Every structure is written in structure tokens, then in C-alpha cells.
Image (cartoon, rainbow, N blue to C red; front, side, top):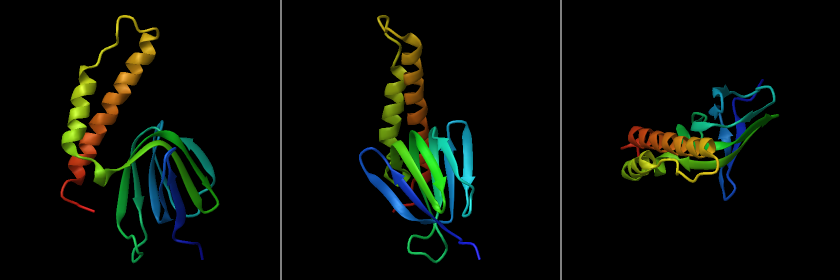
Length: 148
């Protein structure tokens, strides 16, 4: 009988955020969301900006779901282990709406400087910062009142 869970590891350059058995993972790849279930064929994917959602097995110690705001990196499914190497990952329950809104307001005021050497790259960086802050605001609002 096939396993109903797989190991999921979430790591950033500065810390290991998670190493637990999960039943399902929804991953924000650079070109859209995709799901991982136990027994998935091997895959390597580039991460984009979005919400990583993990569902834990019923009756387990963790139970329920947990979400992270991730921004960049890679995901690899090999055997029964999903390894997510994220450039940035923040547990959604730690997001504060007021702080996220302040980041969005600050990012919305940024413009490409007249002396920027690569105007297109600077514009893309500013737009990504805006998208990340807007997503943080949305996730903070959605998680309000859930507690940890």
C-alpha cells in the first residue's frame, strides 16, 4: 500500500523552517501553481512569488494546514522527499497587515532613478517588490484571527 504522506523540507539561506511529513503541497512555481501528492514522479521546478500551502495528515501531531509566503528558489521532489530551497520564506501567521501595508505603500512610491544604469532591471525589481508586498497584505488579511 502506498504511503499517504511524504517528507517536506523548507529551507532558506538563513534557516530551516520545516522538516515534517505532509499529505499535500501546493507550490508557487515561476509559471503557476502545481500540487504534490505522495508518490509523485521526480521533478525540479523554479519557484516564483506566491503562497506555499502545506496540508498535514489527519490525526498527526501537526494536523491542518500551514502556509508560507515564498519568493524565488527551487523545489525538488525525489523519492518520498520534497525539498524546497527558497530565497525568502515567511510563515503567513507571522505576517502583520499594518507592516505589509506600509511596505506596499513604500514600494508604490518608488520610481526608477534618472541615473539608473539598467532601467529595465530596476523597474522589474520595483514591480516585484510591489507584488510581494501586495501578496503579504492579502495573506495577512486572510490569516487574521486564526492565531498560531
